[in-house]
Image (cartoon, rainbow, N blue to C red; front, side):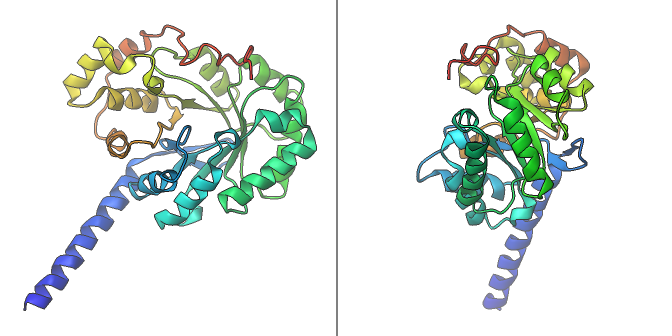
Length: 303
């Protein structure tokens, strides 16, 4: 009898864990990109997530229902991301992986861009990448890089291509020659840097907007803003959860970092409440055009 009770207890525990995992996955809505591909609206970023602990942090996020992982050649952690995906036990085709072409590769020309993409496949341990972005608008190199990326879409190695840190004039110029329209523009957005002009321009051109640094990377002070703290108290949520909900209701894709397991769990709990239109306006009205780093200007970056 005790053996039977033990077996039943284990079965129930496993069943409950399975249900929790499925429920977490189903919480995250998807966004249909302009090429028809579905992309999770909430994921995790991996900027500064490096070293021996990185694969475990990525695996942890995947086991807790995240299915969008954002990395970049310049982060130096694509190998760790690939290991984390394998360690998680989640099937590769269930994970949406984003990477980005580095500035150095762009400056090296078409051959260097091709080499960098090949290296990304090898480091990530995959034969395709769901979304590849131009990381920064390197002057005089965008068209050449974009045309190489289009080749990889043609041969099925890149499912989608897009942009990062791109201003409206860059988008307009690229659209004048691009065979394949970018599916997304990933830009810095948080309550102190709302960028409605850029996101609006993206959407008018059928390009999804994705927010990096959605919580101000912990340096801008939004998490302690009295208005956000008050809204969070009304909903029984944290400031971070309120800010991420604000991103969701703006229709943005976003991916806070996965470096803290407690925050990884907390950030998933944003689909059981809604901000009112007034609360959305209050948060949007906090804009200061304050970047997390003043040098992160797409028209005048020093790197």
